[in-house]
Image (cartoon, rainbow, N blue to C red):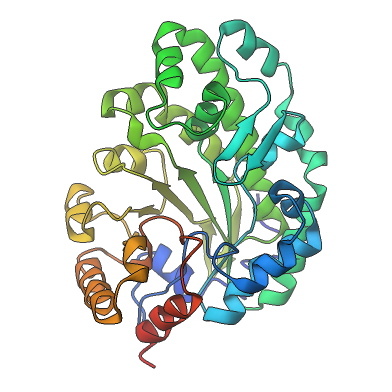
Length: 364
């Protein structure tokens, strides 16, 4: 399906951006840079805007979500915006009881822990998300109208991470209940993963149709899995989620291209080749694995994104500068490199440090 002619990719506003070129494996005069969780968290203007508003309510306020998405682009001059939302927003929109509790994260009203629980949950048709997404689509459209040639990255949670929250009822260190269900009731697990894949895939597709120029699938908890479990019980669902956007194409310089996709997981150094095999254009690497080693494990086949250690954002500036130079040097091993963090921006980060990184990369 060709994207609408007014879409930033089809209209030619974003295909030649540094980000999109890097996702095609092309190297420009410098690496592009953006930061995961750059929208919000560390910015005082974000905290002022969101004062008195619950997290999920702010995600569903189109004007607020758009403004939060734009704030780091204005302040830092990053090469891409990432849409301000949360991976559990699609759950909320189809009627699943979930709140984001300060200091803890997403908490479910009723965990999904048995085959009967899964059967009850999956009675909800993921297609109901399409109409419920109107506030999200409005926010994306508002944002894209302001960004010009700066691409917007849409994002969605990977099926396993959504399923882990549903089964555990909230954040977990080891995801024992989710992993137990995977093996104790494989049929229920497959049904749950198919449902979360279809839901999160629709969430990503909606953002793209509304104007996002790339998509990123976040698998925050996949690092809890063995390679065998990931390959057998998780990767097929991640591929299914991304199938929701694989048909979206646009013409650029006489070539029909498809939407570029990034896959990122936390603690997934042993899973990287399997994560690539779900069908993506770039792999995000967390801070635990040097980029040159990640490139070796991936056979030099794909652009890499990452992987500054978020902990070093608060280190003395010479320490951060040395680390930044090392990450950029190791990133030269890959076909292309998008500078980012190896996880999200910590809330206590001095925003000036992020601006300093961008300016340093730009040679200012």
